[in-house]
Structure formats: structure tokens, C-alpha cells
Image 1 (cartoon, rainbow, N blue to C red):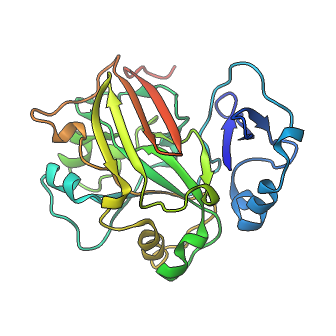
Image 2: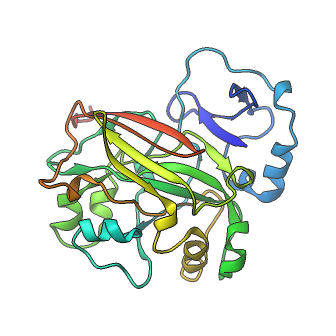
Image 3: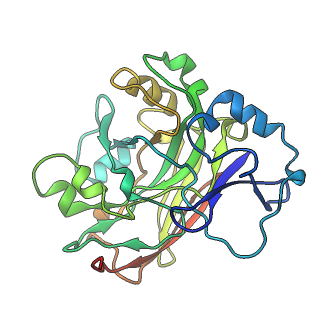
Length: 284
């Protein structure tokens, strides 16, 4: 099942794709793709719906972030050994965990804005894991049962803010528009193995990233179990699981985004994103 949110920013409505790939309005069934709606029982009820009985959404529409009301946006660093190498860092012995501000979240095709004073804005295609029920001290063998579904994430990063100052990586990860998610939340019934998904990213038509989740250092089940030791995971929390090699920082010489750049990225079965990059403009 492919769930999504559509409409004007801040006023998104829940929807789902029918078997023909047409958008159907879910607002008469659930209030949003968020919270308790992501629980196993609720998702089972949605799976049993006859989508053809739901109102069809006609005309052009904006796709919003596929999950609403995200409580935690948790990221895993250096989770592909070849990406660690291109970043000049050692492969970690346990997951590297940092947070990304939820205010960075935007829709999959919304514009990405380069922050003020940025010279090193970079891209990262990642598999996003959306939690469906509270997870606390869960065993790895049971961890995937706490997952509602998966989505595409572009974990944008400002490398100077991230790596050349003091403190945590969060400064370089949290700018407004630095967290496109979607287009869809694809429920686990359509993803038989999260460790066998191809993911890729292009900038201005050049493919920089082309990898597979099979080469993760720490797989999805391990990450869910590991994180649940240190914090409870709540429905709607997103875990962004790391990126394969090919980021701008790793090019020789490095290549970074600029106003006018166009990104396109995707993961097999989870859909594609496309973003235009624009320059910072002050809020009035």
C-alpha cells in the first residue's frame, strides 16, 4: 500500500494510490498519515479498503511529506563502508546517531533552499524507516514488526556547517528544506526485504549515487533495535539509514549544489523525488 499526503504546505490531506496508480482521498477515513494511523491494526484496516470506493483526486496537486506530525527525525551516519571511505572516516563499530530538525521536512518535489553563507550544500539519498508502534528495548528478531513502512529521504547537508565548526553534525543537517521525504509511505507488505533495495541520485542529469541497501553496515532491524535501547521510538518517527557513496564531498574535486541545480533521486519500489535548488531569500 502506498500512502501519501497532498495539498498546500501545512494543509496536506491523506491519500492513497489505487491499483491503477490514481490518487484517492483518505480524509473521510483517517485524519492524517500520522500517529495511531500508522499502527498495525489501523494499516490493516486501510489495506482492507476498496480504494475504488474512495473519491478520486483530479488535476495537478502538490505531494507533501508522506508522514505528518513527525516527532523524531533520527539519522545514521557513515552506514555504508564505501561512503565512510570517501568521507575520510573510519567505518563505525556501532551506529553513529544524530538528529535532524523536523522543521527541515518538506515534500519530495518541493524546492531546496541553499542556506545563507553556504558554499558546501550536498546531497544524500537514503532509505527512510517509519515507525508504526512504540518500540522500547526491542529484540532485533522482532524489530521489523515495529515498522509501518519505508520512504525515500534526501538527507541534505551543509558540509562546512557539519564538519568544519564545533559541536554536533545537526547544524549542517537541519536547515529549512533539508529533509525531503516521500513521495509515498510504502507499507511493509510491499517491501519484502529492506536490505535489497537499489537507491540512486542524479544532479543535473549526472548520476552520482547508485547503490544498494544490501551494503549497509547496520541493517534496518539492527538500527531499530539499537535505537530502542536509548530512546523510545514513537509512531511517525523517521529513521534515515545512511547513504551510499557518491556524495558531492567525495568527488575529486568536491562538487556542491548551487542555485539552479536539479536533483532527481529514488529507491526501487518507493518512488522518486525531484527538487530544484534555489538561493537563500530572507523571510519578510
